[in-house]
Image 1 (cartoon, one colour):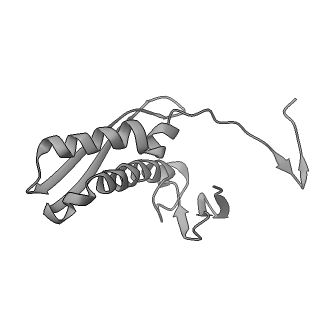
Image 2 (cartoon, one colour; image 1 turned 30 degrees about the vertical axis):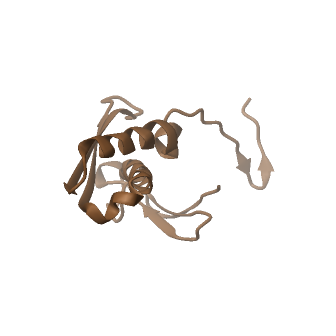
Length: 140
């Protein structure tokens, strides 16, 4: 999978992945942006909610006709100092319908522990490369 993000001016970027859908991000005015789009950290928490939501609905597929509402709220706590990375994320699932709590909890746990690539990726190693004016440049 690959994402290409192009700078569109100011602090804004538009990213496009393998699916071809553009995703625009911007910084808040505190960081010199125009607040014209979600921030990258908002998108990160949105990706977490979407990923575990997809997994939960896949696991609960035989019971989806009994679910009237599934809302996922992610509350992220961040460090005060730079980088203001997330220190915790709490995911609250609001579910309405005729379904046993045990089944929903099983789906949540399986989604989190086995299937959700985003939550697993938040614990991954990140490496870097630099291509400057068409030439790969190593860090010296």
